[in-house]
Amino acid sequence: MENNIQIFGWNFALSYSGKQFSMQVLPKLVNHGFCEGLCRDISFNQQLLVVTEEGDLIKCIEPFLKVEEMKISTSKIHQLATGGYHYLILLENGSIISFSTNRYGMNSGQLGRPTLHNQLGVPSVIDYFKGQEVGSLYCGLLHSFVLTKNGDLYSFGSNTFGEIGRTDEENVQPKVIAQSVQKVYTGFARHSFFLTTGNQLFGFGYNKFSQIGISNTENQNCIQTPTHLPLFDDLEIVDISLTLSSTLVLLPGGKLLIAGKKELNGINEQLNQFSEIEFFKNKIVNKIASSHKYSIVHTAENKFYVFGEKGYYPLGKNSQLMNETKYQIRPGHAIEKIRCSAFTYTGFIKVKLAALNQDLYNFWKRNEFTDFKIKGFKCHLSLLEARTGKSAKEILKTLEEYSNQEIEKFLKWVYSDQLLDTKLIQQFENDFQINDLVNKDLQSDLGALYKTENKDFRIQAKQESFPIHKFLLQARSEIIRGMFLSVKNTGNQITDYTKKPERLLKLFIKFLYTDNLKIEKLDSSEKSDMIDIFDFYQINNDSPYYDQLLAF
Image 1 (cartoon, rainbow, N blue to C red):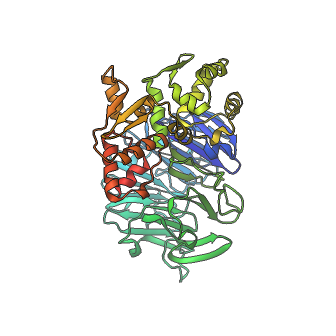
Image 2: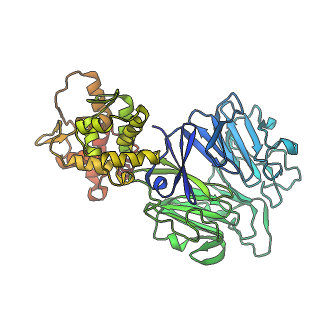
Image 3: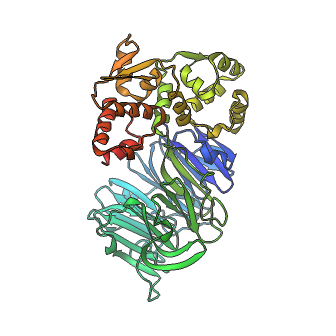
């Protein structure tokens, strides 16, 4: 399934499809429109870089709509890391390439190689790491880290405030500062952290505001070498994000800690050690991200919060709460990653489609078991009728003047809710007489279809026979799909061999339509039985409900 990138800004949003960007005005795209796939990663710095799923690099020149492919090597890209003024790229052949945005001419050794000022923007290989097995790359504001697969952590770049965790004056040459390291946490800041394989957290760098969690009572503005933070020895760390003057630490259960400057709800204070943020105590935090000056928090309630220095609010000036309707993500969809740019009011949200949307989209792309055709495009009439409220004849008449490209985009919306083009959205709304297309979702439309009587297939349990639409069962169950592919005539009924309570089977069928399962109403035995039903029918285990069932 394609990844989907949603790019937000203060008053705009960008959609990326293939190698084209289109600009939309908020809130429509951020509200519900998801961009087309092909993006593995994206970076905002002084320029916008996109790594495609194929490992190619796309450079987007202001105002972002002009796109060109950036050839830096014959090898594909494995990882892109972004600093305040520079980039590190790990290629699939193991080489590391570094270059600067060259906008401000900042050269503090963060490229890991001697570089002339006029060559900062030229991507070049860091020779030092040739032949080494590199695991991951990390960029700070003006410094860099390379973590090898055997756990050696190298640093290089600016060391004005101890950013690279070394006391020597040679800052361009990469040197090992720690061993047995499993993860590094840095960002658009001058301090950093790393976690060892023994689950010990170390911090170092700029500490003027006690943002490392070590009290700066003696006016020591930097921690020159990695210092152990015993507070986290017995704690699992989900994520850490850094601004210039603060650090956020996300713990299991959605608990959020902060150290350093805290500016939230009009209250400015400095916390000399890590403390839980009172504002989020009754909320479950899912994701965190930070820029140079502000942080973004996403909660289990599907709300975004932003806080930081005054004037640095990317999605609503002087507002701590991003409007919960305007910036809401569709039900069932999951936020994989939130990333902020270094110095601008931009960032991106990487969104994973809900299991229902994934299943139906893949089903359409496979072109299987179709019973309807629109100008050569094969599809499923029951789904078309459910989504448009129109009959087959009305659908064909409405789409009569549509181009092939427009029909394909229309079907993409039908099967996955993905919307890319504001003009087409308005056209679909007018032609199909649909009010507010962007707020019309698969879960609701198929939920309405579930309540209809004209189903064409049945699952026979011991006592009761449950009706269902054949296309939906074929799309969502791998074992049923395989059965229809291998047997030409399967009739209009199958026997349920799970032998589980029929009440659960009925709930399962409703789940297939709506992607919704009221787990809280199941006891432990029923939850176990429901897992067995999911496994027997080979349901997409990307569903969050599957994970919740397994948790019991």
